[in-house]
Length: 515
Ligand code: CA
Image (cartoon, rainbow, N blue to C red; front, side, top):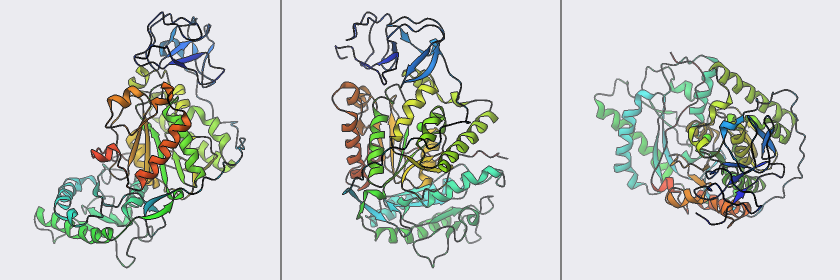
């Protein structure tokens, strides 16, 4: 625990500050301003800087994150039970494309070593992916992948990995429901992720609702060899006699793709070929103070370098919708954002909840009183660049610059949808700590606190806690992350999640009914 009491205030209007010291501060601690703490305040939690009368707004990031339920004396711990959450802002009368920031100066001369694909995209890894139409085939495919890894992969040293795209969809679902296009296009676009080199290989059961032609309709994609038909191993084919014949079919087909992937080499490509998805998970009050602002600074660097950056997590930006619509480059972009928010509001309402269902016990223990406070800290990941594009869930990104890719905030679902959008690198911030990882793209994890970075020294790739400790600036950590992104994208460095092969499941967003 550092000796000097340290608090962080984000905006000059704020009437609370966040305690930065590891382990928090005991009652009686004297802040540099002379304020004496009346209560023990845990790390990441808020202390009242002035008298806050009942019903008065509690201001953080310069905006009301709640209203006091009773009088709060200076030096008091301002916890969630003292706050009434403000209602969500309506979606009418929002500022539309009103912020016209001066264009960010281009950032030239940065490159990485990537794998160029026939469709123009660039991979950061060279992976054979095996697409599955339905969960029924998952066990057989997993068995075959084990054998591919042990028997075939050693002969193809330029191929990084073999990944089975397992998921829970494909049958037992209302496949003609209007919202079923979300999981279907998500699966389709994941199989087209730049890290899979355009090699499409599908394992199908045979009788499932999601037939291979429905998942990947002819003409909807480019494959490495245009003369080749979609490569499908169908387990119910009459030719399969016994389990091992199915496994042999998968191995035989996999080898065709492995040979082509193995012939590929990295080449120098401009940093503009990066497609970076940013998200956070296991957030705490430091997320919005250290890691997310550093990621936001890096987002601006990437946009200046001509790259694509996506931010997502609808319930975590909903309370900042006015900031986002104001930053849209055109009224059409703002309108699409409003449509995505309205769709999500209605989706939550169908389940009799609202955006406040987002926060977790860990968020609250980490000092985040409610979704408004969490959202203000989450949006900062998007930096300051104009928002030039919006994606609906499962759509594939075609644009450079900063994109709002609408997804749920669920780490697994957001990551899955950003994979479908075509991300080739993922940046993930965490305060409470999560060992999150993805099999298909490298995940760079950024810790919000030095305490977490120390304890999880072989899981966290960047320590943004140095910002709260006062040993690095937001800009320092942002540049550190930018350079690490180029190294990881080039394969010069591995992330800890890659090192340990920590991979979370693909989790499809299926807003449609199951049967
Ligand atoms: Ca998340």
